Length: 526
Image (cartoon, rainbow, N blue to C red; front, side, top):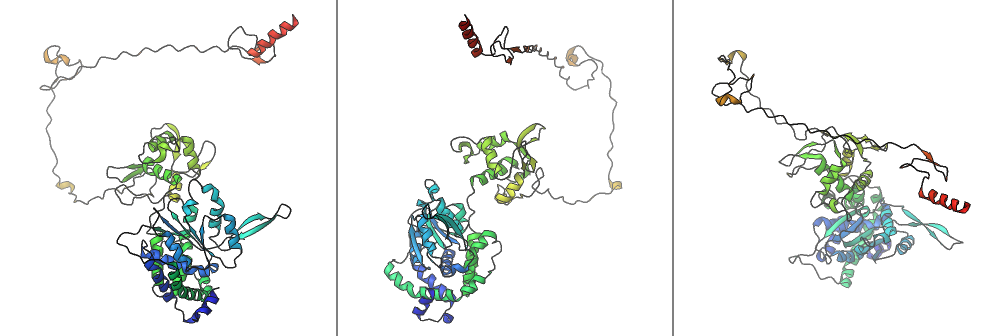
């Protein structure tokens, strides 16, 4: 399709300038959109171009458009992209089976544009769309397939459906699964301010204006498909792992275009990856953070961490967590956080409760920062390992970044610097002299002001007499211990002949049923 478009346009591929074409795409969408930043527009332009060579890339990043409220321009972005991307399919609440077959029937990956995804991914209907979520996660990488059984019972066979495709997801923020957001460039749309003006959108006019741009874009990307597939763009410093994988295709397109686009693309990458607000913590990560910051860390009056406790009892952890304001632990699904639920959450991070001595020397059961052996034999990696792997660096409560790398029990803040002072030589020091007068012994006085002085004590003249010695407190009489109950000897039941220990004597039967059975037997015999 892309080659046919290039022929229809009549422009040789060698004469096409990638930077100029991307500028034209940006100029086409700019009048219709009030985006939150220029970086969002750069990301949309590069993502649009990469759809014409998606098959050449190892991954195709998802593009998420979310907003706090409706009417923020998400659908308008989808409408504009439907005029520009390769083989667009604008979808509203599709079935997973339909998407399977749509993707299987195409040689080149088509572009899926999902609108109103908040109707799919929410707390009420999330369980009904697990197959769709798996499709979107797996289709992120080239060559991904999902096996399904097709055909009647007698002719059933396994068919591996191709699911690799570029995807845009637009909807109200809050319900998108984290497994999808980590594979995506997320643009947080906002309602247009009164001072922001956009052009009137008419699809027929926009389609006519977009046609020559689409033809040039398709011809240019098609001519450099092999170059894009072999590209290994340099990432901005600090962008690595999954974010680097997400931005690789977009930076490759920008480098191939040249001009200002390589710099603009890396600025957008830095904005979305490094400068963006951190993703909200999961329930387990928030629990780890509250345990670290509000239970194990000791703070001074200035909001600086002083030291880290090495171990805290489970009861103290629960008491502290449930007392935190603006935390869910006092009312977690209708009841306070309990020891069993705490152990279940910590088990996910290979942290298990163990037995140790607290700071007062008492043996308690709780959680330690270092590796330990649990009572059931599991090897706990310790809370320090979980904090290091799953939480950001600990910040002090005065707004500065603290030191989270100190060992437990050690001071976190550096010691006060010592100011050098001059030392006087020993011979130059004036020695202190004093005179000591003899102490006159005072005889015990049993009258007047000296009546409070005890025998064997000395009273210095001119000083008040010491307080009288307190009277001894009578010791509390000990109560006699109750004698231990005597254990009765075992007897044999006269009915069932089993051995048992009676509760009292005399006793002939081990239980009421045997007594009743013996009575019935005697009645029959009589």
